[in-house]
Every structure is written in structure tokens, then in C-alpha cells.
Length: 292
Image 1: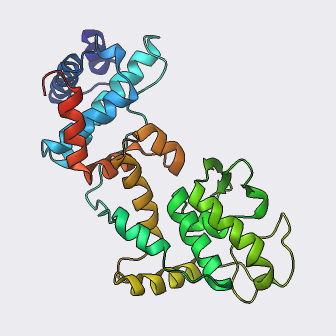
Image 2: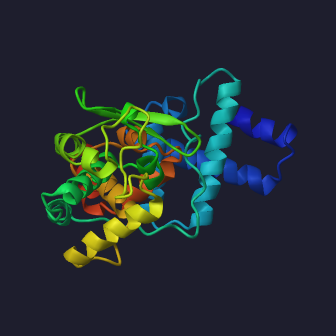
């Protein structure tokens, strides 16, 4: 650490107060790692970094304080990488905490189950059922839903390729409920809506003119079912994506897997999801931490 402080003083020309803050923040994190049974700063993992930021939030540290600490530690680990001590920076994917933090709203598991049971067993209902199950079952962004083509779906192996506006893709599993709903829609409903059999380059979800569903069209469908459920004001594509994330974490999922499934780069997004399952986090802490 002394070498790092000297480097920041002599090479980066940092002020004395800044150097004192760097040293204090690094020592505080080192103490935290030792409490987790780590051998030292060079043994830090992504999970250690995530857990530390989460703990700072639980201690009601201010956003500027958390951002300062993360910045100091990110700079320190970049220094270690430059020295060949580490190969990856565990704080790279943890971005600054924003003051306008989005409030996460999600359905209860019971609400989600009731929502999935609302569509009727007719041509429109089969499409809507597939849409709801797909969005809740994959955590897809609404943009990824409207861009979905038949060539992206593999119902035999139960996985789907999701593509964002930049055409970057990720592969996610398709659960049994979503897979079954998609199969019925494709086999019993799509041809009647479209007026012909589907082709690989066709968009999967279409309106009754045979055109691809738009973002606005999906919003309207969700609002209609939200009204039936009595949650019209809350019913958005984002609430299905958030419900997907929270329900996975509530049932024991981890942030790294969730990140891969949902395709977010900023790990603070995952930390935000953890914040809404505070009870679950406390239970894990009590059962896993040696000094809980």
C-alpha cells in the first residue's frame, strides 16, 4: 500500500488530503476482507467487492462516500494490475451510485401466477400468454422482445437468443412454462394471426394486422391485463423484468448468474435488486458469516 500512496503522490500529484482518504479507504476494505476470511487485498474477488458496496449501503453511508470509496479501490486495483499482482479489477463493473436511484417494483409470486392465468384459451389469448410467460420467464427487455425472431428460438433445447438495439446478443434458458406457452402460440395461434406459416426471419410476436408488435403495443397488452388484476398503474414491461430478477434472488440465485441472464454490465444494478430482498440478505449473512 505504501508503494501505491507514493505513486499517487509523486506520479499523480494527488493532494495530501486525497492521499489520506485513499489510505483510510483501502485499510477499511482490507479490514472488511479479513472479516470475510480473505488473506488480503490481492485476494479480493468480484463477490467481495459487491458485498462490500452492499454493506456500505446497509450502513447508510452517503452516496458520495460510497462513490469515493469505490473510486479509491478501483484506482488501487488498477495499480496492482499494472504491477502484475492481479489480472482483473474487482471494482471495474461497479459504477457510481446515482442520486436518482430507480425504485424497483415487482410482482409477488402469487401476483405473477395470477397474471399468467388471465389470458383466454383462444387465438389472442395464446399469443398474450406466450408474451407474458416469455417476458417473465426470461427477464427480457421490451426492446429484445420486439426484436425476437423465430431463428432466435430453440424450443427443442429450450433456449433463446436475445438481441438488444446494438445487436449484441446473449443466450438464456427458456423455462418449461414459457416453452409450453410459446409452443402453443406458434402451433395454434401464429398462423391464424399472420395468415401463413412462420419463417425463420419473421418476428415472433405480431399484432392482428400481422405486423410485429411494437413497444407501445406490448405496453397496451400489459396494461389491459394489469387492469384485470387491479394493478394497471404498476403493470409495465419493466415490472416483469424486475420480478424475474427479484424472484431468482429470493430463491437463492446469485448476482453473477443474474448478470449473465439479464445482460446488465453495471453490477450496481444487481446490488439494487438485492436491496429489495433485505430479509433474504440478512438470512444469508446470519448463516454464512462467521461473526454474524
